[in-house]
Each structure stands twice: as structure tokens, then as C-alpha cells.
Image (cartoon, rainbow, N blue to C red; front, side):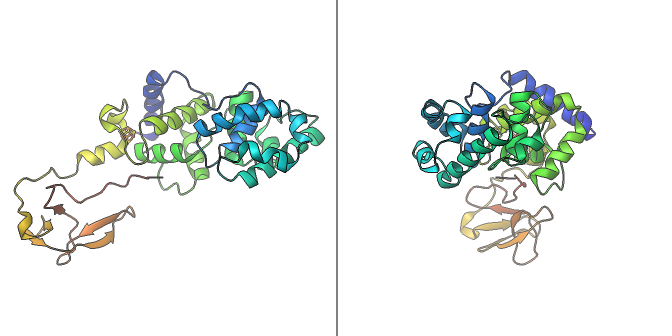
Length: 279
Ligand code: SF4
């Protein structure tokens, strides 16, 4: 299946199960969304939603925040990541909006990116959610899930992933793809423990297909013979070498023949790993 067809099937499959396709950051206007999105960098939406109500009560408008000092903002956000930087950014960003944009949050990605503390990802999220502009921001969830499914390849950075994904879908689907991949990554295709068995798109997923091709568990191994078993040369050994395969994934290998077809004799399971983009 070509990637465009795959992307179409993935978005259709995920739309069926993910009905609320929007940000989980609580907000009532573009100002609050912008502030919450800046706060959410390297932090969970859940935590941001805990600190934002008192913050917005103290600074209900961008004008209120624009006259506040960094020291006034800091206590409201000190429990989230990077509070020093973020309080500095919020103070400066609010002043920029009041002084350079007549108190209105800019409605374009470029305008948003000109603000302190607002990077490409944040600008796209705000432009997409607050102003309905087709955007496809790539965060860690989108990056991981897009790679696992096989929607992108050799995309080393979020910008590369964004470019490749945008080529696969019409503009009107960009925002939805962003939201379904984030929510799928947050709740099912998690970094450490993807729930592939209940995944509605497992039949489309490259990672899942690779898992299915791994050698079956063996019940015929004797752990008294050695910690590992090389299934290529049929012998046991105590200590495995560590090598990188062609996907860059670290694999155990046989110290005698270099084979990666190794089994753990204690569990009977293959020692082979599938690249999982665990970020
Ligand atoms: S099958 Fe597994 S790895 Fe693939 S998208 Fe679903 S949860 Fe993620």
C-alpha cells in the first residue's frame, strides 16, 4: 500500500474511535490557549490544566499579564517544568502582544512564531485550534506514532516528519491527523507500552507487522546450558555481544558467529528487538 493510501486509512480508522479531536488544554480564548500551550512544553497537559485556572484568575487578559512582572507570574507556574524560563517568556510575550499586535493574539503561524517563547510547534497548535488554520504540529507522540505505523521514513527531526505527513494528506485533514496521532500516542500507542492487541489500526501498522514476524517463543531450551542460545549455530553461551542493526537498534548477538538470532534461555523468548521509536 502506498503511503497516501495508508495515511487515508489511518486517519479514517482513528477518527472512528477518537471523537473529540482537539487539544486537551483547557482554555476559553486564544490568549488562554497560547499561554497554556507555552506552558505545556516538556510538561503534561494534565499538569498545565492544574496550574492554569489560578493563573488565568490572576491574569484574566493579556493586558493584565503584560503589566505583570516575572516575579508575579512565577509562583503560579512554579510546579511545572522550566518555570523560570516560562515566566520570563509569558511576561515578554504578553507585552509583545499588547505593544505590537494591539492586544490581539496574532492569527498566523509566522505572527505567533515572532512572540517570545513560541516555537514552530506551539505556533501551529494555536493557529490550528484557535483560528482554524490547517496545521500539522509534530510533538513526541506524533513523531513516534508516525514512525511506528510507517507513515514516514528517515525523518530525523519533527520538521522532516511534518513535511512528509503534509504531503500525504489534503490540507483539510492536517489538523485532524495532528490530533488523532497525539491522542492515539498518549493513550494507546504509548512510548513504553503500546497496546497493540486492542489497537484499531494494528493491521495497518509496520511496527506491529514486524512484531508478528519475530521468532516464536521456544520451550525446548535448557537454561543450565547457558544464559543464551544461538539459533543459527545451535549452541549455548553465557555472555552476548551488543551490536547495532541496520535500523540503529541495539541487539544481542552471538559472540562466536555474530548472529542476532538469539534466545534468552530463561524465558524462551527471542532477544531480537523491533525499533520502537521510544521517545
Ligand atoms: S499496532 Fe501498536 S505500535 Fe502500531 S499504532 Fe497500534 S499501538 Fe501503535
